[in-house]
Length: 585
Image (cartoon, rainbow, N blue to C red):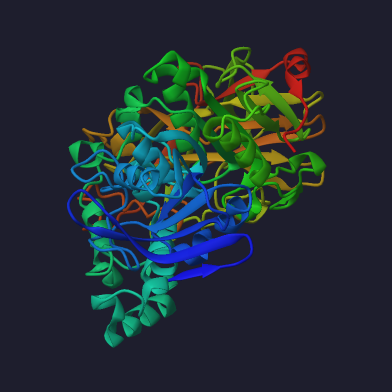
């Protein structure tokens, strides 16, 4: 079906052949004027006319052809859906085949890039190691880099091993299954399936508590890939085919990586940037990587907003996504003279002061890593944070973790935001610094080191950093989770010896935050964040198959021999001032 306006031709229902004969459905928007144009492709599991049409019309009016494609097994595309499995460097290489198909079309100049983010960012990361001959550049907005770390087991992506329960199921119900009802042949068009989905929506919150975890009824037949992923909680060969970190040395393409401090995929995007910049196939590729990190949450409509959660980041939070993409692709696909490659490779928003820094790399070279120690307080569950050395006899803190009464998540979707966490602080041990007498700039990766023990053979450790304002608000900055069995290895988990003290390293969300004079830092340490993450049942049993649980007594030690701490990457005032740049606008 072809529709035409004065400026743009829209051609729907195109069938793009893959190497195994599978046909994937696509829509094309291109300038109405005859000619050959560079091509931008968006590949996602969402309906392309809904997902890509606005971008298609915009970029077609700026001299590009735009392809919106449903990935294998979604909407009108043939085959079976499995996130990332057929998009990259496995037996099927649907991304590669789509790029080369687009390059060969009569309206194509042969210069191909890709569009947009989230799942569409993941499909960009999947295709780039396969090096299609006509792929010239990518612009990844907030995309997942590794299927295990970014899609199924972690949220945000970090090496912690916990399952992102509510976000994963929300994606399945509201993002993948419900929108396809009646629009895909077979089970998704059956009347009984609509009833199943309606029941799943009604029972969604209740079924998050259902045990065993793998018994979620909606997954059977509608998201078998999810059930299969839960059968592989450990890292290893099952996930290798969809892990970008395994193949960064094969990449030879310029990429602009765009993320935000409250993006659920921030770790994955930054990991992709640093991996390619360090190990990309050629020096030209390594030099052509760019990273932008703003103060926003996940999602294209949120990029450039100044009000995020409870914080107003001011006018310098503005970001014109269309302008940046046009200049990027005009440079790489049209050979135009633009200023897109001028300036520093890394541009980040320093929250708190809401200014932008230009850096030569990430992490910044001029940071000092300082341990901020957890220390005892005057009452149970209310400790201190200090840069000072700890005494030899500082007594530990213990708390009970009951999986039947987990600490509630205040945000369970992708929009992990800077909101006040005071309402849950009576449920968790907290450690608070003295009031700062001068600004403290924290810029870089965050790590928490806990010397801790548990009465259980397995448990979780959740660490959260907040900025306490003079008015008492405790604003979320960063967090991380570690499933204790993965403390030494993601591929070879081992249970705890109850009562034994271990050293646990919890990888947290990176940040760039100025804690202002007059503010305080606060750290939460707990063992649950439900339903954002599944509950560790404290039994050490096989993941997803348990129906009973134990109450654990978990203990955090903070003395001279066992100094639990956050490792803060701090920048001096002079280094910050020397790195200031104009906002990206």
